[in-house]
Figure 1 (tube, rainbow, N blue to C red):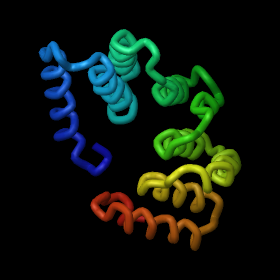
Figure 2: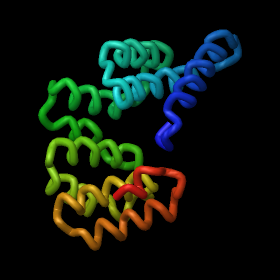
Figure 3: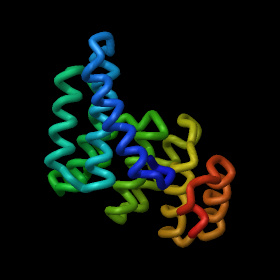
Length: 168
């Protein structure tokens, strides 16, 4: 999905959900994960809050204790419901949560807040290629170009199939 093959990924996700809904042995937990993923994609790829909300509600219906903080943070950032939507991600204890935290802070021009969070989690979570890409953007916004280049190189080293890294 994040590697540039969005249409293929969407088709595969839709197909998987249809198959899971037909499968009487598929657990609600697994089904919830797929619906949650689709809810996030509706927000990230299509900016369709209404459809995203419906998929999110289906995920919660299937697994009422699902941790939906990433969805809630993205949705509230997109709709402007919460001026500090990144705070909904606390505790930031995974690369995926940190990536969304960075995305929201970068798009909101809260670079100092993003950098402070980076300093807090740097030694406690394992960074992935997307994290390094986002950190490079943060460093560009801080005018730390050499550090940004180091992060881009780390991102490419981890995942050289992501084309947008090569454009920076």
